[in-house]
Image (cartoon, rainbow, N blue to C red; front, side, top):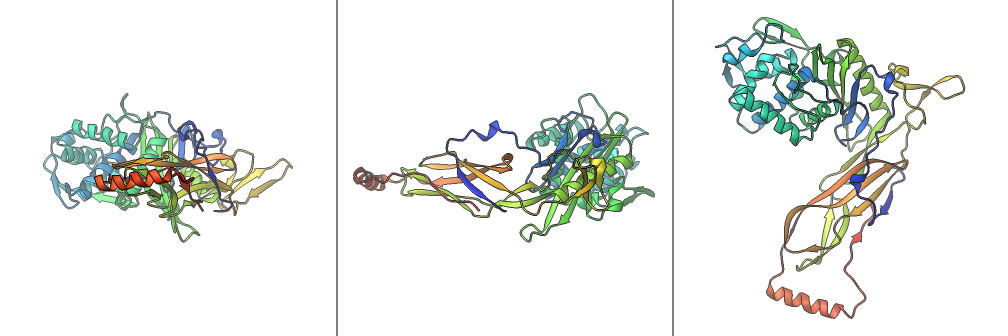
Length: 436
């Protein structure tokens, strides 16, 4: 990362008072979807959005939560992909005009087939069958869905059924569906095995995947479509593309569009947003792995200073678009992957992505002194990342602090040292280390 400046801000304003800026400013009217968002899964940053917290009918995008829970159960060993389930009367909940695998009571089917039917066929009978198997009954599973949603921070969401049938108290948002997509790709990546399938057949019924972007972009591998008359045409779309950075060889973005007018339009709009975001943003390492940030004084322990260091690299997504004009998505050249812009001289020109970015870090230490004994997870520092003086990411630096209290004899020794230190000018203070 170029021009990385380290600033100590011990008295800076708390990070919660800031709103992280989106990276790309689009003309809302140029995006043919009432609500949408673009999320980088590695940094967790929102690249661009419009009405992303508006509560809308998610339709069959709901099934992403069903699959998420099922795959977590498989990981936990409470469910197996090759387990054979016998369909119960629960399948009669599904109406004749709903998407389904046409399961009948007594039919035997594997969990693997149910997951494929759920994701590719968008089968409502697969959803309720999995729900009943996992939680014993559908109402209990819906409780689980809402519990999982809350844990993921899906604050705009309330689930009232498993398949995504339109109901007054069944709603979500583009932002929340992107969070769910992020959880699927990171925590249960096996989901992508199903969402990338071009088709699926069961009991002589053939169904093509309704995610049309799978047909024209090999980097696309999910996530889920959804449609009802109330919802319009929804799509949660993701892709993984190679980068020029060996530290992060691949990058995954998620786009969610809600309420578009037809199946082709949702694919076109989502894919154009996806493509533009890949071209005009990139990921950089803001803080390296095992980066020493500070040493904090410790009292009542033989340990004098606690070393605060990162447990993993911290990624930041930066903008590669430097124009003062909002982006007109209708003017994006998909063939050449360039934003076309009239900069005021009457000619339309292609805007090249930046090769360098200007960012700086603002570090706030939350604890000036640690007192033993300690054995808990603590948020010891907050790092704010700025690009062009705009806050683009806030990183909480947490550590599991384990410091033993000194015994009686050690305390006496510490007391004597402190007594002699009264005659010294040295004071125990936080030691800061430059980042980058």
